[in-house]
Length: 602
Image (spheres, rainbow, N blue to C red):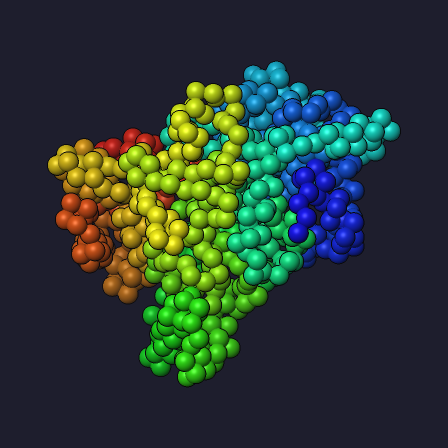
């Protein structure tokens, strides 16, 4: 396998694959998916690259992209690389203050705005940040405000009017001078608390990531269809998409996260990155399907899962040959029950479904692998160019977040902190030398901030986020993530936040799964007009008391949830309770729900 600098990657692939499909984009007006071949992809990138040069983009300058997933995001990335410039992606959900901070610190002069919200916010920043001189509109439905005399459309930006023969010469020269030390992306971590930090990822980081994934994923065919579902701002999706393009795969761009089920159903992808919440919903759906089935169908489902679990975990994962009758039974279920489940989801062609970003229950992983859904659970950070560890094809350990990647070193430091070293570790935090220095040990290991341990097989066991560890007033330490993950495994619970720091016991804010709860209420004859009514009903409270009482048996006494409050609305990004990567902002939640939390300790 050859490893090209990202400034050359797509053009090299175009030389190999020419008119074969590189990208798929849904045309909502026509109601169908349109294809873009490698040759067209290459030409689009060069057109944008020359336009960048024409408007004064210099090597080592930063270009901002503030947009939901769009195919243009890929054109901009590779066009910037051709100019030896860096791209600074911003989450489409980011606020005016968040993008202002990034634009000012990264000294962004040109910003690509995806939709109306991003354009409106960018215009607000433009009024107070004179460095931002140009907004380019990606969406064709954006309405410019009456005073806007400078913003241009992407079509105009990439048109021949915006480049000359001198630009062609200059871009070619820059591509020849491009090297692995050049910055490819500055990805700002949304952070659960504190100031945003720009993680500087070089081309060398990405090239190393491609190499180590080729080693770990050697069992995959060279080319396959993957759906880009997570935000391309997220290092997980960004790195995975680059990896797939490196292999010559076709990348389908899902532009609206709410439409992912339709996308999967229409395209039946062989691969797709996701966060645990996606699979938690799948698991809940399967459990509901089983519970609502007839006695005979339920028995078949349960036997199919028990068979798959024994087949996968007692034999295949241990590289042992299954007994004849177990193998035969599993083959029958593979062509019936497992296939039916996967077909309903649109993933019957699945080869690999990478999953990371948060904790995922072992029960969910076991169920998915038992029915032959090739989930590959892993762990990584923006600072490590995504993957630090992930499940190998066989020999994965269920209690872990996978085996450490090839060429990556991991050790356990003070406070059981996981520390990492290797060529995928970031260069620095942008313009923050003191913060960068604090993130590394004296001998050059990156401090992840996560506590855990290593197994004899080089697997990583995560225990908690060090900064999120609670200490009760009785001196006991509690890892809230473990308890929250267990709560989320319950079908009646959609969200959970555990409080315990400097308190006598652990309590929880619980967001019910309202679809399930309303169904329960109707069966119980509970009258309600709103979510608030349900949260106050004694029979509903009794339901959650029984759920938590049963769950508490799995935890030590000091970890058990003693009291809880039901919340009528979920945590959201817009309200500031969640980061753009859907992690809880604990400080914000503690402040916002202080009265509710205090009431549990009265």
